[in-house]
Image 1: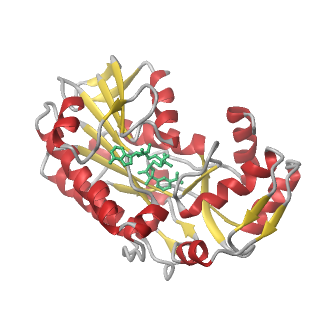
Image 2: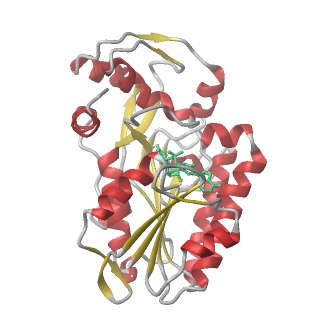
Length: 311
Ligand SMILES: NC(=O)c1ccc[n+]([C@@H]2O[C@H](COP(=O)([O-])OP(=O)(O)OC[C@H]3O[C@@H](n4cnc5c(N)ncnc54)[C@H](O)[C@@H]3O)[C@@H](O)[C@H]2O)c1
């Protein structure tokens, strides 16, 4: 089997490639298949096949062969999508369609895991589940909502065997932040743990549904492995999340002796985006497939220190 990971140079794409590389195989239409090749596709990055998701020829060149599975993570993320409407729709909608068109040429039908986001919901819906109406108030969230619809439709048509993981905020992101407005939820841990001071752009009362990196990578693999007969018509599954306040994040940081200071420096642009996101997720359908979230904020910090060293 060939596994294609778009956005393969990104935060989750790289970790997913590592995880898949450690597995004996993945489920395909003919049962467990050994993995022969993992292709990380991205616009730039070490060890990736370089290409743009909106370029049909580049996409076709990687989505080829007798047994292919696709993990579609490439995306314009929230902050960037809010600043550049055209780019968000081009990459997140046209790029997804491009990839599905390439999958249509492949037999047997590829399993296809797509990463959506709780940003498909608006802030008027504090607790969201898989039946909650999509009401995004950001361009990023609307493109992800369209993506969930496309994955369901293309699965119904038999072009792909799609599965959407609707991710909460994934923390703790190592290294420099990307353009996601949720970046503070990682930075508030990462920077003080590395001994650097951090200025928080949102208020302490801000509530975020979060999960850890290991839980998300586990969930993406688990969703890929589910027998299609168990998925039903709605292929989108909200991943379980912990609803936590920023104040609880800071308290957890203190328990882990982050040496850097945290001070409040409100940024209305970031606060406005975050206020339009939901606060809590009902991950019941994902749990029914055996997918769980992280146990606690403390566990997430412990995992981060183990996996990334905290530097
Ligand atoms: N990390 C989170 O908290 C979170 C939360 C919700 C959803 N998600 C989703 O999970 C996925 C992965 O997120 P991440 O945190 O790893 O993001 P990331 O920004 O680290 O990675 C995204 C990757 O996509 C690539 N990309 C962007 N435009 C591209 C294009 N035109 N062609 C090819 N590649 C392109 C980028 O270069 C980048 O490497 C994304 O779809 C994101 O929307 C992430």
